[in-house]
Image (tube, rainbow, N blue to C red; front, side):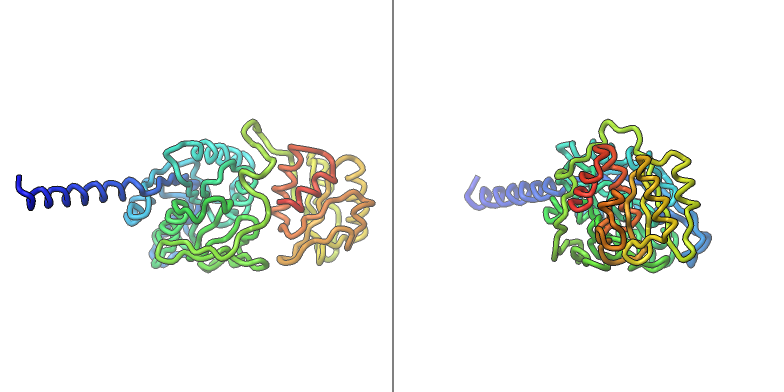
Length: 354
């Protein structure tokens, strides 16, 4: 074999080996599907309200976006198939255990969860507290069903897979990816009932953007999350009963009384202003705390912290406050806190930690 042939052969082999190495370096991302609008269908291509959620399975979702293969080796599993307003504590426990189990695999670099938008912010925060891995976990959804003109699901899914497979997302906590933006689980909230830019972190800001499949982070959350939390759901079959009562003018204690009668061990009160309590509400919540029910004072206002000993003498009544958490996220943290302790001071520490 002459030198020219040898050189050509070596070049071909080098190109083949390099190409194989590049292909092998693609991250492995598992999509765990739970239903939602991203898997929804409408009667016409212009149906964006009144569609049926959770109709399309995970295999069809993956097949509809062939570009996914360019950014990751993707596989999928249907965990459940529901509209997210039907999400329950039991669903959360099952999903969290599945995520932790999946992330333990050496052949998995990240997880994407497809989810309905109604409760994405709650599922994201729950997982942010109980996932035990630094590998990326990205929750994604859509505001338009898959059958709609300009459906946002395909590009959202592509971005989520790219994000979950990226090195930049490692250690960032659970992320939410829609509308080309990266939101952190603790701060994200659904802000609009129908537009595609509904997910925002209005008080503290988004974490970054996804541009042409590449994540760009500009900030990170300082609150502890995922592998750095004290919560473990691996042996939990249920969560403590905690519900939310909503404050308003002409406030009464009917909802509070009903929750107490039903056996709740904790109540989050979404008060007016800075978690303000009408006189009859304060009196009843104080009475319930003396009977052992944990009371967390939150606010129905979308921005700002609920200040301890501000609108109530929380030291005297032995209430905890939600800090900047929304009532729905305060409920999640209070449930998890009550799996660890009944000490209100320890629970307050957790609200300032997570």
